[in-house]
Length: 474
Image (cartoon, rainbow, N blue to C red; front, side, top):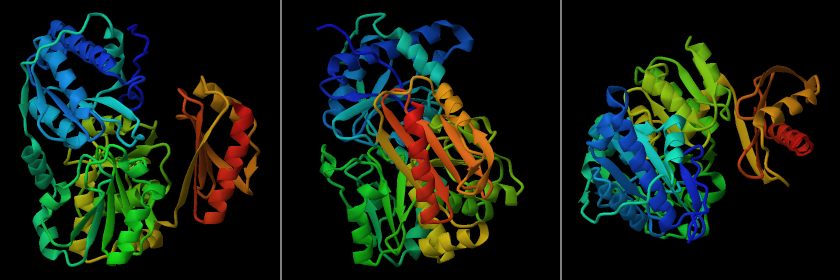
């Protein structure tokens, strides 16, 4: 069979449709490329990642169809190259692999397609407690097909569930949560890798789980914790009169929140709540960073606290690098990933779930009250995102943004344009901090349009305008 699939790592790993792109042959090609990269780095001496060749390479997998089998193939290839792979003996979230790379000082390989549909699978690479940067993925891509995959069945397999759970407990103590929890907490695992783990962290009769069984088809929905996929969670929260609803994506590095009224919180609501709590109750101080597709309340909080604030390209690895270097203290992204100083520079849905439970029970506040407090201090947020197909992919994001900039009116819906940001597309920020972002995929014919304002009507108007503008611009 000819090797025709072009292996390219995107924002967070390499992904493909199973049996078409993501096949055992192609997985072995990627595994051999990883092995060649590791050995090449080791040969560079002190400046290279020499430890990767001798330290354990941790291999994890989610609950997708044959993810465990794909992970075994990766272990066989790495062992065939005389490296030191350790295959996890159970399904664990992606953040567990990130944590183990920090602990073991090695590389991590996670077989997962995260929140993508059931037909997809993928591979994420981790190191130093976070996603590897583009220089690493580019180097791995350059190694593809350099050598034929070697294989050996003599690899190690070990359980690390207790190690991961202990890490989470060391960052947020679940004991006070358990002792003070008086209302139901509904957790929607979306059939994913974290299933059962919140109950182990907070053993309580008040934890009610849904979609905890394994279903490689994810119940016919995408395992992404966004409002359209959380109808069952919203209904269960209302039925149980619950304190909160928590949803975790397929590999449990992202989180969605439903409040006590059954209202879905957007990431532009979740992130300000987290920031305010970390700053005022947990003593975290420092620069706040977020992806460019996030909202304005976080910037207002930073300004009120006299803290530096920065927006970065989409992809958690960009904000994570700021955390890892010590340049930032709190980081967030629009797809539901959050991290802060004192934990790994990596998004972790379970850790964020513990943080939300802690802030509710220790302050004796409902999530709706937490949000009301943010609104009263920093303003309202109505955020929406729409993805739609284009007739062709946008080849050059910068050219797209420049072309669109020339066509912008001086005022939008009666408001002056305060700032234009050409990061990952074009973000137009208005005088009131209201904004719209037009972000093309770059690899497929897809346009993502975002908008945020203080009212449903205005946000929808901004979205409609953005959709109207982008079609002629591509």
